[in-house]
Length: 310
Image (cartoon, rainbow, N blue to C red; front, side, top):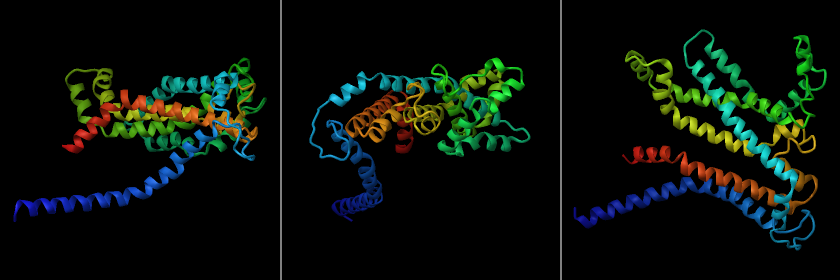
C-alpha cells in the first residue's frame, strides 16, 4: 500500500469520525442556541427599550435601564443579599457538609439511614420547603412554641418580619435544604480516595488531622471546588424559597436579584427594565464562572486533559 493510499484512508476515517461527533452534538447544540443563547440576546435587545411587554417596541432608551438598576437601593440590597448568601455558604454550609461527609464515610451502624435522612431535604421542592417553613415560623407556631417550652422564650423573634434577621433565617433554611446535596457530592469524592493512603500515613506516625490535611483534603480538592462553584452559582440564582416565604420583604430586606427581576418584569410590567436586570444577573454569573474557571478550576481541567491525551 502506498503512502498516499494510507493517508487517504486516515483522512476518510477522520472525516467519518468528525461526522459522527457532529451528528451527536447537533441536537444539544440546537437546544443550547434556542433556549440559552437566543433568550440572552433577546433580553439584551429588550433591555435598551422602555417596554411593558404589550405595546410596540419603539421607545429606545439606551442604557437608562441599567443606570436605573445600579442607582436603585432595592437592587443594591438584592446584590448584597446574594453576596451575603455566597459568603455564608462558603463559610458555614460547605464546611458543615464536609464534616458530615467525613463522619458518614466511616463505618458504623445505621450509616445508610443517616445518609438518606440528611439527603431527603434536597429532594423536596423549593416551593414546598418555603410553605412548610413559613408555617413553622409563624408567631406562636411550632418554632416559637418549642423555644418557649424549653425555657428559651427570649430567643423568640419575628423570624420572617424582622429586617435585621430575615436573611439569616433564610440562610438557615437554605442550608437545611442544600447541605445534603453537598454532603453526598463530597462523600462520593471521599469514597474515590484509596483508604490505604490514610492508613499508611497513620502507620508512619501522622495524626488524623495531619492525614486529613495533607492527604485527604488535597485529593478531595477537585470535588470540593466543584461543590463550591455550584454553591456560588446557586446563591446568585436564589428565587423560589425566598419568593414563597417573604416575597422579598419586609421592606426589600430579603430581596434577591432574581426577585427584583421578577417584580420588575412580571408584576410591574416593566419588561425592558426587567430584561436589563436579567442581563446583569447573567453577567454576574458569567464573570464569576469565568474567573472561577480561570483561577480555581484551571488545574483540574488541565489535569483531566493531560490524562485524556496521555
